[in-house]
Amino acid sequence: VFVGAGGGALPLLQKSGMSEVKGFGGFPVSGEWLRTNKSDLTSAHHAKVYGLPPMGAPPMSMPHLDTRVINGKDWLLFGPFAGWSPKFLKNGKVTDLPLSVKPNNLASMIGVGLTELPLLKYLIGELLQSPEDRVDTLRKFAPTAVSNDWEIDIAGQRVQVIRRDSKKLGVLEFGTTVLAAADGSIAGLLGASPGASTAVPAMLEVMQRCFDDRYPGWEPKLKEMVPSLGSKLSTEPRLFQEVWDHGTRVLGLDGRTGAV
Ligand SMILES: Cc1cc2nc3c(=O)[nH]c(=O)nc-3n(C[C@H](O)[C@H](O)[C@H](O)COP(=O)(O)OP(=O)(O)OC[C@H]3O[C@@H](n4cnc5c(N)ncnc54)[C@H](O)[C@@H]3O)c2cc1C
Image (cartoon, rainbow, N blue to C red; front, side, top):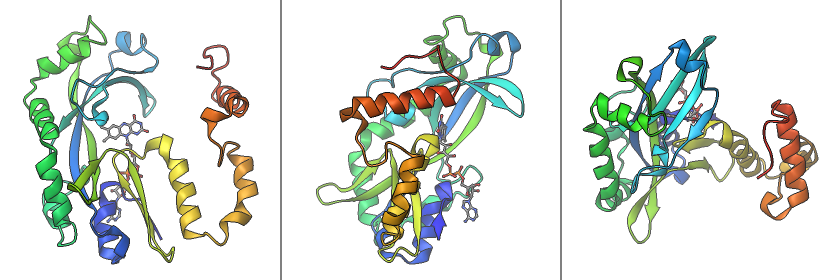
């Protein structure tokens, strides 16, 4: 069984009774965007451009201005701005967070509460921002941005992983974690941003951990599909170039990008 239920994964894995989920908790952070579909703006920007997060802000707050095509219509989105809600899913319940606290993860949750004061400060700062403050942040990317062109929309909900820690009781993580039962019968994905970039490595990890007896037989085919499998691209420049060229060709980026 694979549990890929976004913020709903933690409660489902807890319900499954697997011992590997003990000590894990979740901390929900919601997100908001500024968005516009004004054609003079959308036609002038065709990219996803990242900036640097403000000093002391967590990595999930990396501001970006994106082109998104939604139901065939062009949009520009800017954000995310963090918000807070105890829900684990965008349409979840306010009881999601309290009901996820179990005797086995209480210490991890308290540990994070005691050590993550900078995050709390950052979240409060974000919550206090007015719509005009948000457009000011956008102006760092697009200095001519006008408030009337942009509206605020709810972007979604992220559930950051909290795990046990021998020194701090619990730590908050910003990545993705694959949990799998020792007998391979159930696995699931916890964390904030699985997204496109981590979907393939996460699935390969599930295959390896849940089917360790069959995985070696699958490896030749997998290597054909993912030529960099098992290699460290940073130490193999020739393989890196091959993979880069392949990606550039498949994505139709020829002539517009170069290796870095
Ligand atoms: C503000 C924000 C910005 C992001 N930006 C990017 C980005 O630019 N690039 C990127 O790659 N990723 C981005 N992400 C992350 C990306 O959206 C998620 O990683 C991705 O959607 C996760 O996919 P998923 O299938 O694991 O979970 P989800 O998309 O959350 O899907 C889980 C599904 O499971 C369902 N479900 C939950 N519980 C149950 C249950 N008990 N029974 C039945 N169904 C259930 C839910 O209703 C939902 O439909 C962003 C996320 C946020 C919040």
